Length: 97
Image 1 (cartoon, rainbow, N blue to C red):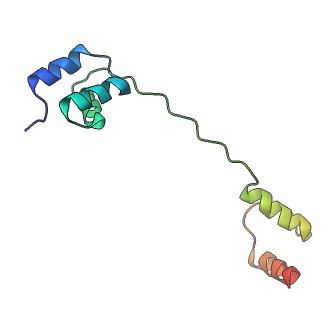
Image 2 (image 1 turned 60 degrees about the vertical axis):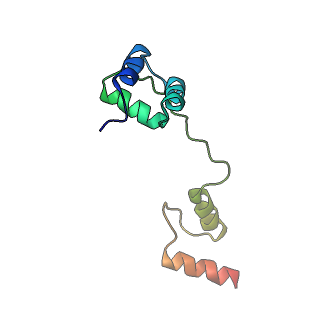
Image 3 (image 1 turned 60 degrees about the horizontal axis):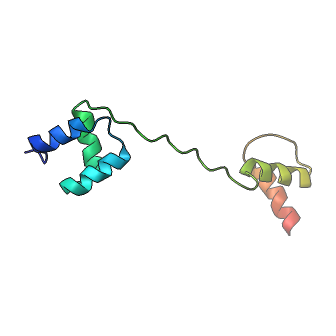
């Protein structure tokens, strides 16, 4: 059994292309979630204009690689990429004691 009547489907078809704002308006009118409206529109093959995805926020501060590089330079360990080896960790512990 569908949650959508023929009248609801006709209203969705008349409002194409749908977007998030229209989907939320229909959701409150129909008593359904906006995600359900979007899903139904896609199922019916109606055009839906998705909002552009936001870019990920940039991190502020040093990265793990920066910290490891700093530890290696401070302890005069050989330059290389990747995590500290067991021998490098033992050297760190020796310098902390």
